[in-house]
Structure formats: structure tokens, C-alpha cells
Image (cartoon, rainbow, N blue to C red; front, side):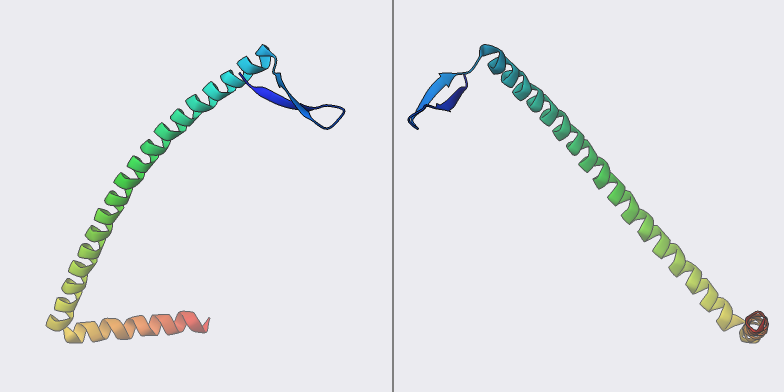
Length: 104
């Protein structure tokens, strides 16, 4: 049961018992807060779990992308080594096109 402190005329305090209706309302409020806290805790655990799975999937995807880019780079280097004149022609043509676009 809750108690309140009321000042008397001479400055002393008296402890009065609070109305039972207020006590019930306070108890109901505490129960509601406890239920909400449990729900929030459950939601937080679920969110942490999803976040951990998503982070793992993102890390795997990053590894795959880095691997694929590395493989493509190796293929391009091999092509350049096998066809140096063709590569120089492609680079020259790309330079001409780029300089034409930049001038406009």
C-alpha cells in the first residue's frame, strides 16, 4: 500500500494512507509496464538476431563480390598480356571518345 506525506500547520509531516483506488491504479500501471518491458525485450532479442543474420549475409556477399572482381581482373590482365596491340587500340579509341565528349 502506498503512503503520502502531508505537511501539518506546524511544519511536521503525517503519513496518510492513499486511497485504495489509487493503489489499484498504480499496481495496474506497474503490471502494464512490466508486460510492455517483456514485449520490448522480446522484440529487441528478435531484432538482434535478425541483425546478426543480416550482417553475416552481407559479409558473405562482400566476400563473393571481392572474389568475383578479383577473378574478372585476372581475366582482363590475361587478355591484355595475350593481346597487347588490341588493348592499345581499345585504349586509344576510348581516349579519343572521352576527349570528344569532354570538349562538348
